[in-house]
Length: 449
Image (cartoon, rainbow, N blue to C red):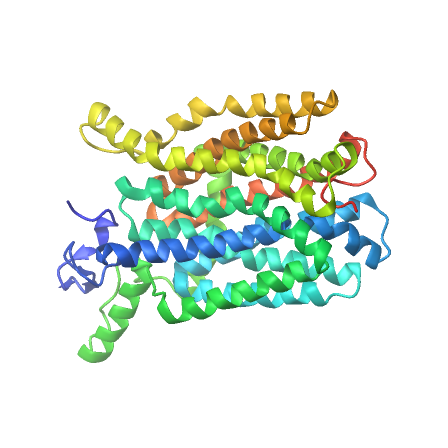
């Protein structure tokens, strides 16, 4: 079987002055790397995605203490101290994704994670609410890089028929990170203070960056071929040797096109727009629900600051269950549908049946959570409801992401995911601001104490 990659890049060594791979089994092509090396890159990127998503909510249980330290009383500002990170995740991809398609994945990973570490440390050292909000927003912008270009990394090294498990691995961060964060952050904030929630994340990110600089390699085929073409031009003295598709355009034009591509996909591709709107709605409702957990379980069920984070485990358990189910079922359904209806050809649309089957679980979970809290049923009942929310949310967001990766391939996957992340993170930022008023509490659940 030929590797699943851009067929336009497979040439003999030199055809009409175009440089490409030495056939479909060229060992320099990342798609032909040893399996352990390809999965190792996916796993290592998954770790930084998880870390970024943990940091999005790890600070939440201690946000009330920050409000007290900075002498703030506004519930809106309190909620914003947590949700402004998601605003950074929304806007960062618009700039970052084109750079990855121009300069490659590796360079962008290194620079953006280094910037993320710097801004996380700045959050920990902030002495007033203004500087804290600015640095937390910038940390979100820098941290959006792994979330945005991870789909491109999967498309670079994993064939289409094997991407289900890899995308499930990547999804651990966005799915479980916001749940694990408050669990750890509750105990850290209670024992060490809210600043330590940032210092711990920064230490872990530094370790990730050091290992990445030693072991990770570039995976983007276009960048590797550009380097190959540059070396050949130098050694052969033939300035006409170019990579197909890049022969007439300057880096500035490439960058401008890349900056515009996520917006164009969002505005002019109906499938990107509709999927992004649906995912954004679900993600916003998810974070709106997350913003109530601490208030509900502290005020109504009398949990402590530390144990209030454990209330997030219901949703996390549901998401983890859904993640395992998706990893097992996704590729099997793709292959079965391809064999049955497309003469062996697998299509991106074959990733979506799981979304159709499991989406109804989501409103069931919201109903159980809301009804049991309203009637003051035992605390285990609403946690069971949140587990259904977790399962339903996963089977909406993950099939949408892998569909976009399959549909747009290595060349545009980062831009398609950037468009999706833009709307998703905007809803995740703005909807929780309504929590204090919707639930009739003085401050959002993730901002009190």
